[in-house]
Each structure stands twice: as structure tokens, then as C-alpha cells.
Amino acid sequence: MLTLSIIKADTGGFVGHSAVHPDMIDLARRALDGARTSELLLDGQVATCGDDLSLIMTHTYGADAQLIHEFAWDVFTRTTALAKDLGLYGAGQDLLSDAFSGNLRGMGPGYAELDFEERPSEPVICFLADKTEPGAWNLALYKMFADPFNTAGLVIDSKMHDGFVFEVYDLFEEKRIFFDCPGDLYDLLMYIGAPARYVIHSVRSKALGEVAAATSTQRLSLIAGKYVGKDDPVMMVRCQSGLPAVGEVLEPFAFPYAVAGCMRGSHHAPLMPVSVGTAHPSRFDGPPRVVALGFQITHGRLIGYRDLFDDPAFDDARRQANAAMDYLRRHGPFEPHRLPLEDLEYTTMPGIEAKLADHWQPIAGSLEPVHQEHREEPARAGTASGTPG
Ligand code: F6R
Ligand code: MG
Ligand code: MG
Image (cartoon, rainbow, N blue to C red; front, side, top):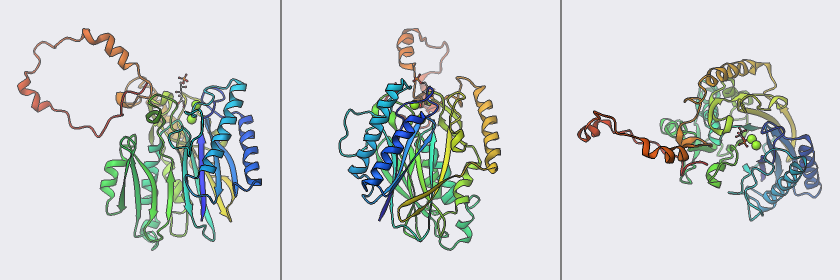
């Protein structure tokens, strides 16, 4: 059994929140070399998207292994020290605890992990995103594994025709549920269409009994109870031979759909598929970016990566993302560019409400209470626990 782990953290931005400093990348690379030599890892590579540093690792310790999580924590502690030394922005931003204990759950870094038997040929795509939230993968995963207009194999490949099971987390109440698709498709969409709360955690092939995709689901603002940076999720997807083909896995990103994040984690903006060299969100701290790193995993070795969005076929998606960004930006502080009040990562609302509490007046000629029942608001799907700070 092989484990693929992507563990990531923002341990300091260069400049502002736009990129990782090359010296931090070098430091992480040397640490991974050491872990390979000491045989902690079968293989490891460093990659970045925006201000997030990802360690992409293969090993045999299984998901949630203390040894692997502790190693990643140690690397992030050292890149934090370097970031402090260089005076980089938000040094150690995602390290929420002073010391490591057991595993990384609730400690700030994000991670996606998958245990599997390596197939004779194992094509895997690691997706890294910046300036958005874990639910940003929902639309793409739905299209890859449930939409025949995206994935031809769902209709014409006998190993895919039975469908896939989606595991969905409720991030607010920390519980999970499984949807067996295509049968449960409409129920699934009711939840995952609200990606601030319901996030696809994994997807399993019914015919192969194999897990095909896994995402990171940590939502830092809720863990920490205060704003500490957008979650900037990662995802891994195994491809081909009864799973979606590489091209079917990439296809959803040809549409730069809107996600929450961007400036101050408080705006809707298009998710732009980009090459690794252009994954530096600068305009209005956006638009949010996604990179796709393709690997062949062979006896645990990471052969690659290939920079899969470095392809002119995604130029139109980038153009559309720029046009959508112009359109949304002109809304300034209005929805739907700015997030609804309950989803803002930054807010001044509690202070404003306290200041203005005594200034609100009844409106003359208001409807009598007897009419209130006709104006009841529909129940909300859910709101963030507490007010983000
Ligand atoms: C960080 C992010 C950025 C910051 C923004 C303000 O991941 O999304 O948009 O929120 O640059 O940052 P501060 O408050 O640190 O000045
Ligand atoms: Mg940052
Ligand atoms: Mg980031």
C-alpha cells in the first residue's frame, strides 16, 4: 500500500500574499532530499501556488501518520524562521500552534492524503489552489465524476458506467455523508452547491472499489476562530483505466467558475487555471489560481511533474477569467463580488452595529405584526459559527 500526501501551508508571502520566496522553496527541497535519503519518504517534491508551499510526498506510513505530519510541521517551522529572517509578509501565518502534537489536524496546515495500491501505470494529478476555499473543488469534482457532458467515460466506458460515490463533509458541524451517484445526484447537488459549508472530501469508483480523488478540507477561519488566511486547498485525482481520463479531469477548469476568496478572503472571483510560473495572484490579490501538476507514480517515485495548464487550450479560460474579474470588480463592495455578510473573512460589522444600535428607528407605517407571517424569511442553509474577525 502506497500513500500520497500533499501537505501545505502559507508560512510567509513574497511580496504581500502573492508568492513563496525562492529561498524557502530551496529549504523545503533540501528537507525532502534528506527525508528521501533517510528513507522516511519514497519520494517528494516541492511545489507552490501563490503564497502556499506544498510538500508532495509518497511513503508507506498511511494517511494521518505522525511521522509524516511531524516532518511537514518541522519543514514549515523552518521556512517560517527563514521568512521571519527575510521579513516576509505573514511569516508563519498558517502555524496556529507552538508545538506539534500527534498530527496536523486543527494545527493550520492543509493536507490531502490517499492510500492505494499502485496500478501498473498510475497517472495522478495534484491540484493546488490559492486565494480560495476547499469547497472550490466541488464544481470541478462534480463535473469530473458525475457530469456526462464533461466526462464521456461515464456513458461509454463500462468501468465508469456504474458511477461514483461522493463523500461530503459538513464543515460547520464536523460530520460526513455519502452520495451514491448517479442515483443520488440531485441530493448531492443540493449540498455541494453551498461550498462554504459542504465540501467533497473524496470520491470512490463503484466498479473498481478504489478511491479516485481526495481533497483538503480544513477551514482555517473556523479552526482558529479568527481570520488567519484563506484555506487555499489542494486535491489529488487518480486518472485513466476506469477513472476519468487526464483530459476529463482537466476539462472542468476550462470554465473559470466563480469561487469565494480573492481579496481578504471576502470576494467572489473566477478560478483561473494557470501554469506554475504564473501562479502569483497579484491583481486585487487574485484572481484565485489553480495549477495542475501531472505525475506518473512508479514504485512510489514521482515521475514529473508536467505543468498541465501550461497549454494554449486553457488560454480562453484565462481570458474569460480576466473578463469576469473586470465585471465583478466594478461591483466594488457590493454583492455578488463581496461575499454575503455571514461569509466575510474580514468584517467591521460588529463595531458598526454597536455604534449605530441606538440610531435605528421604526419606519412610520410599518406593517402590523399581524402581517408578519406572510413575510417570513426562508430558512437559511447555515451560517458561519460566530462572526469572523
Ligand atoms: C491572504 C489573502 C489576502 C489578504 C490581504 C490583506 O491569503 O487572501 O488577500 O487578506 O492582502 O492582508 P492583511 O490583512 O495581512 O494586510
Ligand atoms: Mg498569505
Ligand atoms: Mg495562500
